Length: 71
Image (cartoon, rainbow, N blue to C red; front, side, top):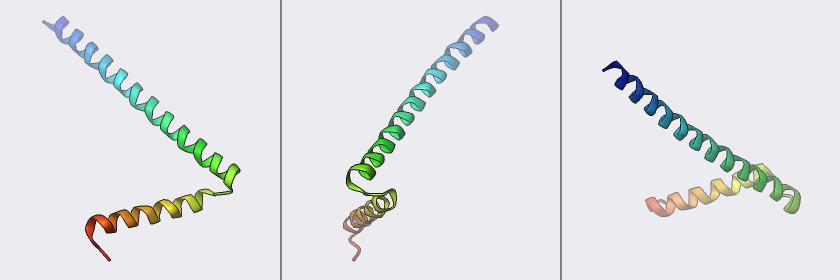
């Protein structure tokens, strides 16, 4: 009976580990893509991370006001 529990625990640990690897890979890929886009904006158009952050903040505020109906 203990062998079944050990095998089940190994299978579950393997599934969790492979899921974790997929999540980490997707996270790193996304972070690298964002970093490359910001770097490209910096070199090609002279747009710095601060300016990009301000634009994204304004975009988010406009979206939130349109959703909530705030003025």
